[in-house]
Image 1 (tube, helix red, strand yellow):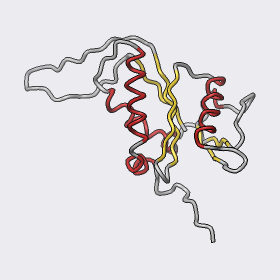
Image 2 (cartoon, helix red, strand yellow; image 1 turned 30 degrees about the vertical axis):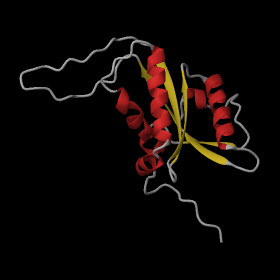
Image 3 (cartoon, one colour; image 1 turned 90 degrees about the vertical axis):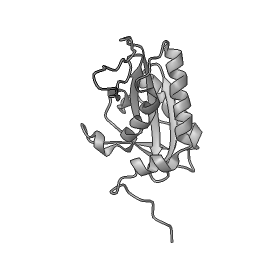
Image 4 (cartoon, helix red, strand yellow; image 1 turned 90 degrees about the horizontal axis):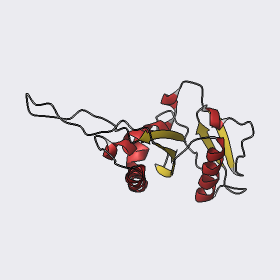
Length: 171
């Protein structure tokens, strides 16, 4: 699980242009943000997404509760959730839903987090686009997240590291 901040300030990428011409990129330096939370199961490529307009401990609790409900976590289904050490993830006064166990990755180690690899896929259709309102950006991000749910093979190929623990078949 990881969060990603995107906003009305455009994601700029290089583009091809005819020799001697400078490409034009539209954009406004406006600082309104959305926070995309991505949950991924690396072995299957299954994802769960949440888009919010804020990030804090209270919002994180709501997102965890929504995640637990959407995947059916509880007494009969346990989920180990690897998260980074962001301040709002701290265990102090954090209500964690039944069936969810948080495991904190080492500090300053985003390369160990499979969910970090989701953001290139989320950003792709947003790059070099200028959104007039936060609502239009929200719609584009939501559409992209829905499309990514339908691409588990692509997600698995980019989040299942060779060293990631595999579930063993029961004998």
